[in-house]
Length: 212
Image (cartoon, rainbow, N blue to C red):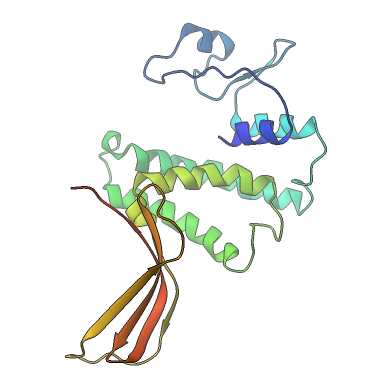
């Protein structure tokens, strides 16, 4: 995904060939002995078979501001992400193939790294400031993969504020209103909890509709 995003950003026309990873064609191994995707074959016959290397090549073909801010620090963050987060993500996604640890163990290993990104993004619009950089585009697709393993786990509460103490025996009345339209079963809501007519807490919530 990140390779495609960089190619699209650079306005480079390519011919896409989708494959089934469970039935990889011989042509894939002819292009790259690794047999993994993505693989970019250039007009001169040379091959780039790492997604981040495809990103770098695409950006070399155009003018870009994705490299403007602390480029060496960006490269370090991407390297750590690909070296540390990606292996844990693969074990989380395919935990049945890695029974040596529990599903939650792999999930928590991913969260340890994602929490560092969340801390940065709590103060910045993007990882390196006010505009997207190559690090955002390189890391985002892997975060998306993590989210889609268990969307319910990925949901969270934001801007939660407690207005008063709730005591045993208090009757809580919760009122929720949609912040945005429901998309793909995902609900984004603003919630208010009252004790009588007094506001006890408020916050934003996300949830997923599950069909039984």
